[in-house]
Image (cartoon, rainbow, N blue to C red; front, side):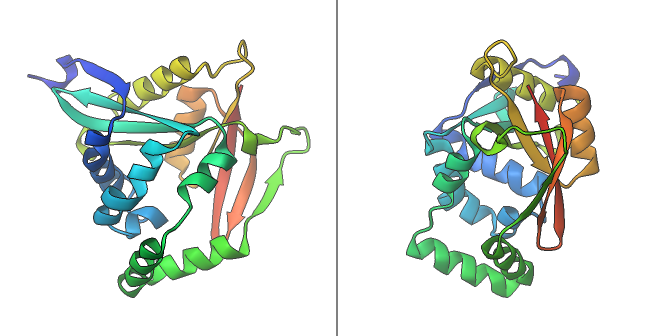
Length: 208
């Protein structure tokens, strides 16, 4: 069946989807701090926390019965990130062992420990970190640019009531110009500031 004629099904993520979500994240968002920890870490340690967190909700997109994308929305950005950042002794061992293969992990960890510097537009005064956060969205590389990401985002926003009527606003952070264009054009976001973490500068985007 031609993929353009296939039906995309969007549903809440389940535990059985973790391996598929992790592989999509690993392949689509390679080079990020979490991806550098390896697909095994994503499957066994990271995404189980994401799926289980009471402060977030993950949806997956299926085409022809296979998971081809996911989106995670946090109901409270700060509480969600605190929740999934809780590390066990095993987590520390796995992360430290990964720094041998990827020295960038050590640099990223050092930047996280030091903390970030935030700069917001003068006309913006909302405390975004207790708002909804579009934590992550990723589509299988072979199926990108076919509207699946927009469908996922639209579905998640509708399901979670992220709109002005419900007074639920949402923010997202990205350092990708392509991703920023997607969020602005397809999601109605606007840039309201930046976060500098080590040598990386993230754009902070916001929508009501």
